[in-house]
Length: 121
Image (tube, rainbow, N blue to C red):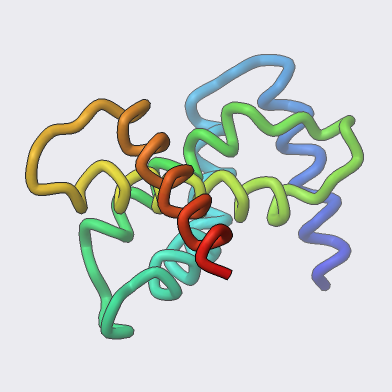
């Protein structure tokens, strides 16, 4: 059964790539909402459902559907998983600081912290 669904997904992705119809996009998103919810639960701090994380994961899913190339050769779930995780990490990075700090400063902070850890060892 999974092979049949994968084939249907591949056909739908090719159709969406060709016509960019919202209805096709919605069908693809609806088919993979469980993947986004699963990844959001993995990022939840206490294992309980978190509506904010689920929403961020769904945004990642929509971006995945929009950017996925069915002819590239990778599976959609692998591509979407990475994209959704990236959206969730960005959410934590952007929401976890008490003061609004530019992204470049946050990234620099992480680099300095990693370098300090390496030097300590």
